[in-house]
Length: 426
Image (cartoon, rainbow, N blue to C red; front, side):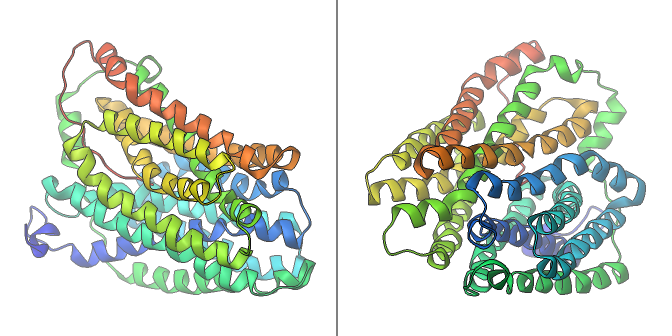
């Protein structure tokens, strides 16, 4: 399919410009999420807090996602795609600009408040932009468009720790002095988002609805209640465990490297996180789109998660370079997990799909719980031992992939083996 046809609707209109605007949102929240992962080590140094306390960085971020997921869906329903996106952008701008007075205040709670506000805005964008990207053109190329957008999300994840590390760790000093450059990357985010708000206000956004939603409503399909659909309920648990594992690795990567690799400081470790860690994460997304097309998604999920259990255990060992390489390897193999669990969890839910989607988004609250617990283990033992938390999370995901087909057949009351469409969401 030509590039022009990829963004042309059934009415003949081109949605290429609209898609480009939506794609900028993927880059934006990828950058903001990547930026967060340099803050744990920074606050440990600047505010003299423990690793467990620094885990509240992720708690503030992911609790924002948890609390805002369903309201974001309701806002989109009430105000449409454009209105929901503008609300999300305003919240992000407010959170980003808050870092200016937060730097002057200099207390931990002030910074966490900014991160929470940012998270509520990013939740609005993620809840709206992902499904919207799939409908900006022919139905059969929706997966192609969402993968293109997710690529820019991966670029944002790479840029975040590199830019953040440059401004935050380069400041040096101690206490308030080391916080001097903390507001700069967030000031940049606030300015960019303000410009995006202006562009989105003056731009036209078509209200397009997915054909499968219309078809489901027309057929009036009735399915079991959500709580009786075990492939969904356990999918929520699997997503909780996955995000807990992912966030734990992202959050304490810099701690791990500084403590276990001689001659590497925080600034260099943050660059490694962006270039190599998130670079492998983005590469995994590229390769994963082909893998799930050749192998049944549940089998790919189980295999990738099992590999990451092994890699995480190797990272916990004292094998020097081998342990570090294993830790980098987890970035590659975790890349397909969120979208795959999401697709497997909502399969065949009919009229309950939208509610189920919101609940799966809420399940990423696992990212709020794992880092403080992981930090507590590190404070009482070592950073290496703290990685037992991601290992347990990946083990749970592997079990979900292994038993998904049995759960789905029991829920559906048949043994159909039709393919699952993978739609990356996070």
